[in-house]
Image (cartoon, one colour):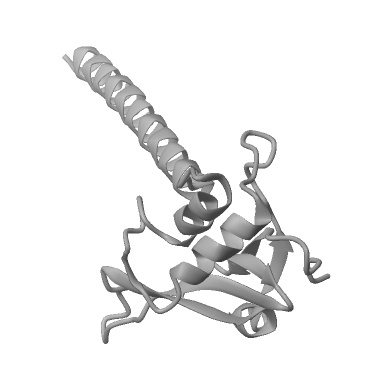
Length: 156
């Protein structure tokens, strides 16, 4: 289902290993930023803001309306969001996977708060994974050393 023409909802597009975000600005259009890929398929440090039809941006991917922070922050007035989104068209913006990607841009437009739960989720998951790995290594090392000592003592 497409958002209504009166809304400026955030659109989350599922693209396999990552999600792309856009802000719906009415009449079937979204504003989002596009990265260009180098020959090594690494995004450049700058992105261009574009206005395109939602179905073009979504392509054959799944998507949903996900105005993710509505319960935490009050959305800005619709006219301000649309005006500010349009003022970005054609501009190149700095890009960083951690601090300046598409979710940051759309949450800043809607709430004045550039945030990303994808980054938080990945960081928390990675941190938890490192902690679990370190604990497992410590337990294994400690257990392994104890067993070796026990085996050595029994051989003597």
